[in-house]
Structure formats: structure tokens, C-alpha cells
Image (tube, rainbow, N blue to C red; front, side):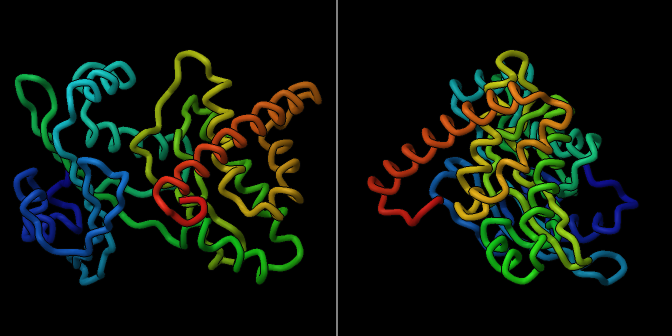
Length: 273
């Protein structure tokens, strides 16, 4: 995917990150372990571009999927789709929809007689910090209107995603980055590997995105600002539609909370992981 005139092309090639074999042999960077990755590896790396600037990047490596997972992916994304290619396509589609997100820097996918084999992507970092880590300090330091401004920005992000026909499927606060270095909240959407365009039950999928976001935001902020977020998201919608979304989002958020509580009890995890 990287072109010879890209400022990082030489650095990628020197590190062996311009081929699938090289990406899987790469030993540098910082491994970002997570129990739920299952057959995937994430590595934070830094490379120096042609101009001498340092670039923070994330290398994602995908092992071949089991047959059941492969068939499910083909049903969702089309025959022959592999996880690395899907992620790169999703990043491109999100950017076309006007969403701020990472940039796909490099990509490779092996092909075998039974479909995609190993694959990898390299994506750029985005500014700021994950909303789940940043939101408390932002609300405490950005003035009395900070909660309302954040509600407006979140509503705009989710509305643009959904109006473009897509859902994220993992829209927790950990996958939205907040950068307020310019004096206003600016949001970046990451982890687009599961984003897709639903053909049926669109309302259900949109509700799931909204419920994941509501569940993962601080309860005090939700109490004060969720109604404003939903009203802004449904700009032009009537009171009946607002009530329908409210009821459905609350039911789904409660189900997410119950499932999370069982997971915490089973694994001894901290809250909202």
C-alpha cells in the first residue's frame, strides 16, 4: 500500500514492514497486550520519515482466521475479505464520510487456496487521548460549558457515521480520542476493524452504538448531557422518535452493564474494561 514517494516508504522498507513476512518477523516496538485480541497482535512503533520527523504508528498483525470466522466475515464484507483489508477499507470509507480518524500507512494480506491468510496493517496515531481516560480532566478544566460542547461533538460524530450508512460496533469511549489542544474538543474515531454497513435492522445497530457510548461515559455527565446529545443526534426528529431511541438505548445499555458485571465477576477485572 505504501508508495515509493511516501515520506515513510524508505523507513518501512528498512524495517522490513513493507511485506507480510517482514511484518510478522518484526521484533521492535512496544507490544500492546490485550486478552481479547485472539489471533491479533498490536505493536506501537516509531519510525523516522524522510524529513527527519518521528512518526508514532501502530502495527496490527492478523493470523489466519478459523473457517467459521472467515465465513462470517465474508457474509458481512464480501467473498474473499480478510481482516487487514477490511480495516484499511473501513479507514478509507470513514475518511470519505468526513470522520476524523487514523491514516492507513501500509497494508499486506496473504492469499491462499482457502481465502485470506496472514495480514497486517500499519496505521498512524491520532492526536489526544482516549476519551475514557481524558474525559474527567477535560470536564474539570475546560470551563462550565465543557459538558455541553462535548455532547455536541459526540452527537455530530455519531450522526455523521450513521448518516453515511455505517455503524462502528465497538463505540465505547476508549475508541474515541479527545484532543482539545486548540481550545475546543476535537474527536477522532479509532479501531474501525468491525465497522460495517448494515443491510437489515439498521435501527438496532445504531442503538447498539449509542448504548455502548452511553454505558462507557461518566454517569454524572450522562445524567446532565445525554438528553442533549440524543436530541442533537436526531436533529429534525420528532418527540416520538426521541422517546423510541431513549427507551431502546436504555434497554441496550442496561444489557451491556449486566454482561460487563458478569465478566468482571468471572475474570476479576476492573470496571468498564
